[in-house]
Image 1: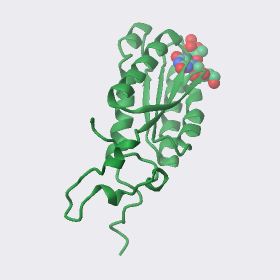
Image 2: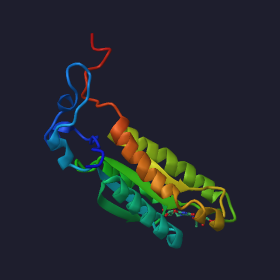
Image 3: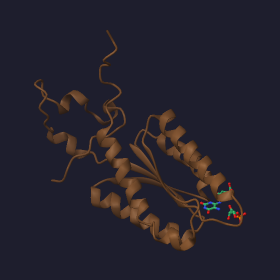
Image 4: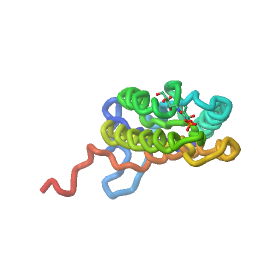
Amino acid sequence: MGPVRFPGKPADAVGFRLADTFGENGTSFTPAHLGSRMTALGLVIAEFNRPITEQMEHEAAEAAQAAGAEVHDIVHVPGVYDAPLAADRLARLEAVDAVAVIGTVITGDTDHDQVISDATAQRLADVSLERDTPVTLGVTGPGMSAAESRERIENAAKAVDSALDLVDELPDPESPSRTAD
Ligand SMILES: Nc1c(NC[C@H](O)[C@H](O)[C@H](O)CO)[nH]c(=O)[nH]c1=O
Ligand SMILES: CC(=O)[C@@H](O)COP(=O)(O)O
């Protein structure tokens, strides 16, 4: 069996608790029942520059499959600027452990690429913090030509891997706090 990923959403919702995974002396073990639930991802895919984001979507799906994760839902949006609301809706789902946002911003004649990239990244970071759910940025650009965008298609897979890494690595918010006493 491959590595078991520890889901990020409340443990009670999936039938086990963090305490199940650690022995009293700090050694870790993995009860067999933990293997029954795969980490579930939400993907947001921007349709703008679709020939490129189509390949990015493929890379993202392959990365999830290679890691043994489930793609619970895919939401297509017109462009990356429209992604934060879709990411928020996905992050609100109990079944979704993390969200990866995929898109590419290619430079036009103005600074518009900078404007939409900055707004998108900032609002996605806000969604992640507000929903207490990993939301990773698989959006390439700005300041980039179409050729440079095509060279960065693999960043979609990196966003999926990062989302899964965060689900594994983030401490459980239900754990007792050091500042409690
Ligand atoms: N120029 C790019 C866009 N622009 C569209 C916006 O993201 C948005 O869909 C529109 O303003 C409606 O709200 N989107 C990209 O994903 N990539 C671009 O290069
Ligand atoms: C329409 C867009 O979002 C983008 O292509 C902006 O291009 P430009 O900077 O040439 O207006």
